[in-house]
Length: 172
Image (cartoon, rainbow, N blue to C red; front, side, top):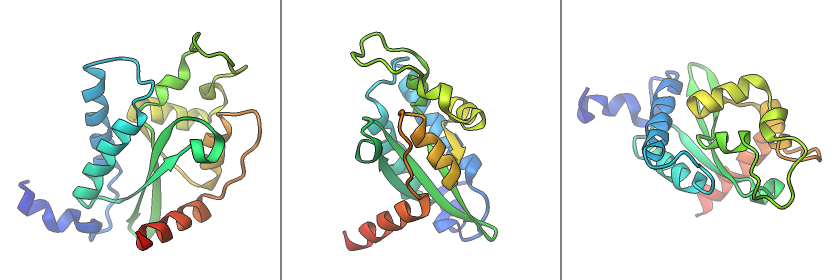
């Protein structure tokens, strides 16, 4: 389909179809661009998140929220949360195409964790992030994702967190 033919379909997802496959496709395309240059994703999360967010919002596929983990759990990492309506359901996806950097022990770290984040993350989320760079997310999955990075429990409600971001977007 050409851009003009696709226009009504993608404009804020008026048909309310599940756009997960399209989001996965974009994430994999952007990740592949990086993989052609390097296998080390360390420090590239902001670059790839920006590229993905730009494509998703420019094509009106979904609403994207920039999540800086440094502001939440003091981990220097950025992910996106995509939000859209599919049918009558509000769907949210965690977009973290560079997650595989948390599956390898980094001998350069001064304070090495006892467990890697991937060892603490729900296996379904882990599988989806490694394979597609995208995973369904709800409040429980968001808690699990955040808590996989540390030894303390983080209790941040995903709905409240995104509501604050929505208000911030409107006032900017």
